[in-house]
Image (tube, rainbow, N blue to C red; front, side, top):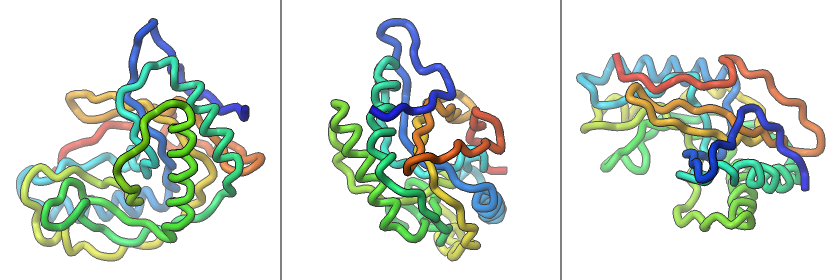
Amino acid sequence: MREARAVARSEGPPGAALRAFLAVDVGDAARRALGAAAQRLAREVRGREVRWAGAETYHVTLRFLGEIEAERAAPLARRVAEAVAQVGPFELRLREVVLFPSSRRPQVVAATLEPEPPLVELAKCVEAATVREGFPAEARAFRPHLTLGRVRDRVHPDVAAAGPLAPSPFRVAEVVLYRSDLLPEGARHTPVERMALGATIPRSQPSEGEIHGQERPAP
C-alpha cells in the first residue's frame, strides 16, 4: 500500500480520539484574494452576524470524518494515499462568494471554485477510500466550496450579493488529513498526514507553518 507522509503525531494513549477531516489546501494568491474579499465583506456586516475564519485556515474539505480513534489515522492515510496516487494533479480557480447551503437559510459564507469536475472526482476517490477503510459512507452530496465564515444571525444583503472573485488559480497536488481542535477562540487545524496526487509529487512548502491559526470574530 502506498505510504502517506506524516507531518504531525496522530497517535495518543489507547482509546484517544481526534476530530479529523480530509481536505486540499489553497494557493497563496488564492488565500490573499479570499482574505481580502472577507475583509471587505466584514466591513459591511453589522454586529457579529458572521464569525470570520482566518485566511491561514482556508481549505476545501473533501470528507469530514468527525471524532475518530487516533490509531485509525495512519491506516486511513495509507488507504487514501494509495487511492489518490492514481489521480493526476489539477488546477482550480476561485469563482464567487455565495451563501451555503442557500441564501434563504445560510450557515456559511463560502467561495465556490471551478472547474468542479476534477474536484468532485477527487472527493469520490477519497470517499471510496474511507469507506474501504471501514468508515460509514457520507450521506450528503459533495458540494465544492471553501468556508470564509460561519453565519450566526441574519446576514447583511451585501454578503449575499458579493459576487465574483479574482480567479487566483492554484495547483492541487495533495490531499491532507487534518486534526481539528475546537478551542474557545476558534478551531485550530493541524496537518497530520499529506498524500500526494499522481506518481511522484514533491511536498509543497507551507506558507504559514504546519499549524493553521484560529478563526477570529469579525471586526
